Amino acid sequence: MRRHPQRMLHYGAIPMALATVVTGIVGFRFHELNNSILYIAWAVWWISVALAWAAAVLLIYLAISRATRSIEAVTGAWLLLVAPLTVCAAAGGTLAEYLPSGAAYTTLVCSYCLAGAGVPLTCCVVVLYVHRIAVYKLPAHDAILTAFIPLGPVAQIGVAVLTLGSVAQDLLPQVLPEAVGLGSVLFGLGIVTGLLSWGSALFWAMHAVFAVVYQRRSACVPFNISWWALTFPMGVFATLTAGLGDALELNFFRVCFLLLVVLLVVLWLFNIVRTAAGLWTGAIFDIPGLMATYDSDTSCAASSV
Image (cartoon, rainbow, N blue to C red; front, side):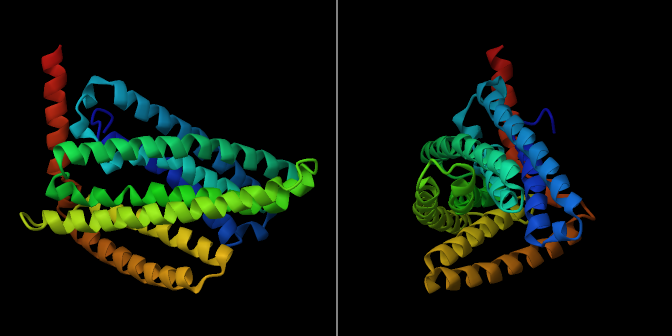
């Protein structure tokens, strides 16, 4: 995995998983059982922050290394290395709501810094991906479901800024009283960013559905590990929709949230059943499209030497 430039992208899943655990701890109120659990979650969050920065640096390495010289090597999976920044930012906002004011303020500031790095990086990779599909068309049919991956990081931008704005509205008047109205401004910015992010995420969802339907005209889409690329984007899209429904008090977003939750449950059950069946042979981990990209990149690097 360390020598495979495409599978190295999955290192970004580690800080995202840790940030999700932190969100789950405070979301399900486990910290109310023992106050020390809250600070353990805070420590885990800092670890996820460090790993998120490391994943972003790994993206720079892959971009300048000879192993990824061709733009054809760029897929939606590249976003796995920049998504941890905004995922950790959103988790920091959720965690800050339960921390003491001093620790919460530090977490809030750090989370905004994470979002400041994650948002432009996400936009840059999305532009590269659009250029890639314009020049080299869609990924191979066995990796076409990676077309859903841009949906997740794009929606995560809205989740992060909306969550941080909600916390800032309540926290900043306490710790920064001289900055009159700053919390309300950040909350308003979160709503606007959330709406923009929701619209962009809807476009990428439509693009991904079109890409899968288009590829199925020429070849089937076999089940493999890339099918799990459907769950994270849909989950983040549902979270953003729920946040907008609460912030704007619009039934439209609440109905969309319920539909997305039903779809997400169906996807989870389908993937779990098919993955359990495929583990016997290991076929779900075989993604020839990714291996072909790696082989061509390796050949290109060798020829350049």
